[in-house]
Length: 325
Ligand SMILES: NC(=O)c1ccc[n+]([C@@H]2O[C@H](COP(=O)([O-])OP(=O)(O)OC[C@H]3O[C@@H](n4cnc5c(N)ncnc54)[C@H](O)[C@@H]3O)[C@@H](O)[C@H]2O)c1
Image (cartoon, rainbow, N blue to C red; front, side, top):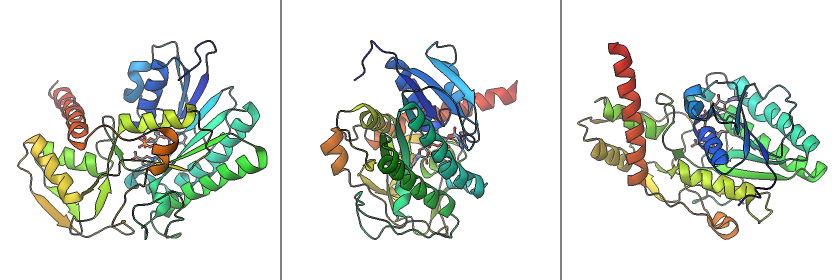
């Protein structure tokens, strides 16, 4: 995949977050020099602690809403809180990260002639009226709701990417990520997979919203990272946008049952009112990813859940043993 004769310098913004840390790891393994930039809003040093001694890995605490002057060959722009709890905590900062952060990173890409990949989201489709969602669907988004700081911020970032591409010939790649899960998800970020697993492992009630029949599709993190690498380094030359996600759809009730079964938990399911703007259905149409990237998810939900549950179990036991000391 990579030309080893020239060491490529890769900037990963949001590199200490859930997805960013897995991406940094993969890039280091593949022989790239990685500069991880993060303001640690939702990221953690623990996520990248194992990379800190590696000569190919460098960490910089920096907020991408401020300009960054570095020399790089490729940029993966992941910085942005991704869970509703976190992005609604400071909505103005969220939209600044998406919009001003994108302008700063695109400016850097323009100056250094770096290829830049942006992690957009299935949230650009809003509460979709087309199912499954192809990239050609323009979405159904509330511009003034509680989720808008994230959804509209990401939509504006996409606009900026395509304008820099058309106006300044910046070499862009835009990926729309659908729900992804795996080790290093934040345990308390309210995302459904981490929520259910933590609740089941701690013997608490499993909280479902509405009737629990809304569907989501879940992609395991290793599959997602593989998609990002193919998008950045594959021979297709396609700016995107391209959906990356697992099209296999589950209801929230199905997911809760799978988690309960794998954790041997006696937790009960409880039903609460639906939060505002919660989409009923979300499923990627990945035909473009299959055709242009030769990509498709490989890891089944059962296996992905097993690895994720193992991670959360070890996190809980570390906290318990720290408390006992
Ligand atoms: N995980 C998913 O299911 C999912 C789905 C769709 C899109 N995405 C996108 O993928 C990217 C990564 O998501 P994640 O799940 O790893 O989230 P995350 O919250 O774990 O990671 C985001 C990282 O960005 C950092 N960050 C936030 N604001 C910053 C700023 N202004 N400057 C520098 N760093 C900043 C955080 O500290 C964190 O380390 C995000 O852009 C997100 O929108 C993720």
